[in-house]
Structures are given as C-alpha cells and as structure tokens.
Image 1 (spheres, helix red, strand yellow):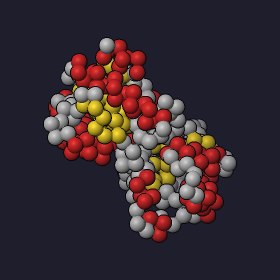
Image 2 (cartoon, one colour):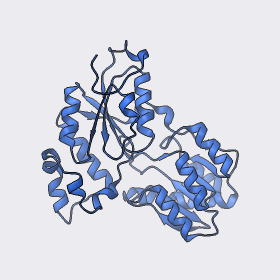
Image 3 (cartoon, helix red, strand yellow):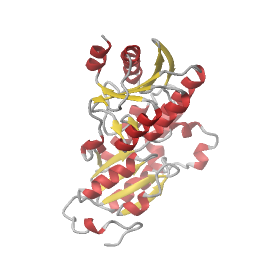
Image 4 (cartoon, helix red, strand yellow):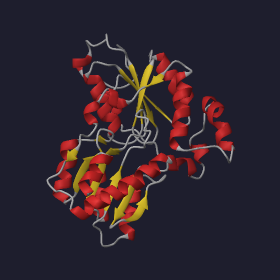
Length: 304
C-alpha cells in the first residue's frame, strides 16, 4: 500500500478489514497515544497534524500524514475524503491564544471553507466564541461532508483515570477541604466554558484558568502565593463533550505544579485523561505531590 509519509509497523499490515480512521492532532502526547492505540487495534490512521502543534513522530506512526494550519479545514476534509474516512477523532490541544497573535491571519491564511463557516462569527462582536461553540461548529462542518467525529476515549478508554488516590502521598484534611471548595468553583467555571482548572489554598481562589491554559494558570498561582502549598483542581465541564477538550494531565502538569510550589492535584475520575500513567505517578511521588482522582460526591464525603 502506498503511503504519503511514514512507516506503519508490520504487525498492522494484515488488518485491512478494520475501517480507516481520521485523526486531527493538536499539541501534546495525547494524539500519539491515541494513534498508537488505534493502530494496535488494526485501524489505518490518516492524520492531519495541526501546523506548529502536532508531534513530528506522527509522520512515522500513521499510515498517511498531512500538516495543515488550523484555518484550513477544507484541506483537512479533502485529505480525509481521499482516504475514505467516514469517522474521525480529535486529540491534543489547539492553542486558542494564536487567534490573538499579531498577523495571525497572515501566518494562518484561512481557506474558503473556513471563511464560509467562521467569517460571520469573527466579524460579529456579539457572537459566542467559547471553545465548545467553535468546536461544535467544526464538527458540524465535517458532518455535512460525511465525516463524523467520535471521542478518542471510545477507542482508548484505558487513558481515562480511575477513582482513588494515585500517589503514595495522601492529601491532608485541610487539603481535602480545598479540593471540595475548588471542585465547586471549577465546575461553575467549566459550566460557563471559561476553563477547567482552579487553584486554591485555605479556601481562597488563587487563579482560574481561561484562554492561557492549565500550566500558565498554575504558574500564575505560584507567583501570587510565594509560600506555595496550594491545591490544583481540574475537572470536566458539567456537560462535557467527550469528543474534544477532555481534561488531560501528564508529567508536564506535575512538573509545573512542583516548580510553582503546589502540593496537590485533584482530577475528575473517569473523565480525565492520564498520560503515561506510571511515569506521571512516579514523578508526583518523587516531587512530593499528591494526585487524587475523585468525583464530586467522593470529594464532599472525604472533606466532611
């Protein structure tokens, strides 16, 4: 079989009875793990890597690969249709801050498909441009052209974290109270589609995630709380669409918390992606950070 780029492991050569799947890959390790899981299941993976975001290893991992800007959905769709893709998945972060960079629309020249879908939204001062709204428009645009998006976790459910304290270190009673408090705040912010992370200490909100992302939110908390010892709470939105923007943590998150002075990371069980779990948990144990995967009911019970 001819491939536009990349070499697929020979163990997958005989799996042509599985449907080909499309992957739109953003930043981070998540897309790589999803691609590997799908290949291990016998799927042909045809990947669109978002320019300036996607890991280069995807070029050698996937059956075919195309690099394209986030404002070129017409190119994405043509690539998928050329490979017979009817179902696709998204994985990885797209940095929304790029929309507000100088000369961004010169660096990322939109195609006609993008302009037809988003030009009225970008012109209007009143339209909703939250993440769920924009990503929902993307999925509808692909669906009208015969490509349905499905959650990546449908294919790799093992990436979703299970409930429990994952580290050797347990949170203190005071930290459990902060988890409960931060959980309520984070769920409210998630319901507004502002962000999914809140940093708290002693019942005080230090920082709330918005467009900057979780790592920058944590760093800001560290700069505001020099004494450290704070708790990071990261949750799914109340009506989380598992096709995109699923909360994700990995070793990078743990290292950021450590450098900023944090001591606890609370995440939502069964709705948070834990990347490279063994390495992430080992890093937390080494750096003295407790990781707790919980639900709202469990968080309240533990803090009582």
